[in-house]
Image 1: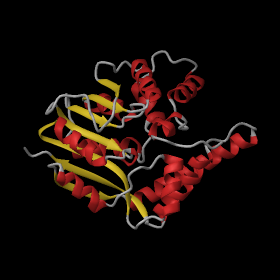
Image 2: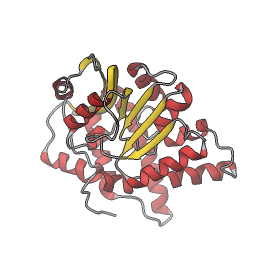
Image 3: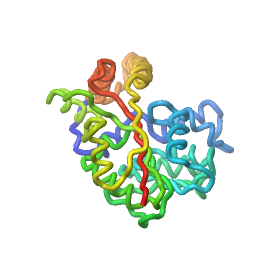
Image 4: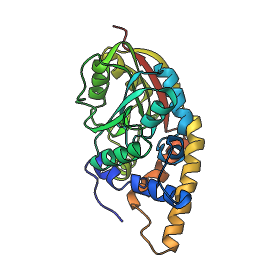
Length: 279
């Protein structure tokens, strides 16, 4: 199956992980969704590299604690938001562009009774509908690559943070320039709109007022995680093909294979950034 991508919404509308799939798996395993606990979602709703351990690392970088007010940029189905609320006692607002994922996040959050601490709202991270200086932390995981105006997202993070607040996020990076063909496939398959270097991330963060506290190149660790994720995806794809059912979006599969290869070759990779709003 192929169809043209015009925005990240197109990509996430056909993403292989959805609230319906998560709930179907849990209902099949448990027999019912009654009494569902937050920790039962965590093996299924953490659609980022590194799982809950990555959440803990970002929480430490961002100084998230009990009653911290946190914004998750590009929150998806709200998995990290629910984890930060349940595990740390934070209040988390997720900003998510895709309406179907906002709806799915609300359903998952309701089922585990975290509505009092987690809200995922439809919005654009370059125009965040929150008051200035109202938040203690902003986090994001492997999502800002979808944002064409990443400097605008950094500017909004700076605006909504209180003085002393922190932005902590992971994102795709490029170590070497990509060919036009590779960049196009990464757009066609995974809506990769902004692919820039570590140094360019740092330059843009400083340009909106942030002080850089730490930059951690995660390329080696991502190489291991992505290779395992690719093997799992190939297994699922093979199973669906043998069953005679649609095997998923072809450009997504091709671009994912390319991305893993580029990370293995260290042409691309990932990094974690921690930045401070000092004043």
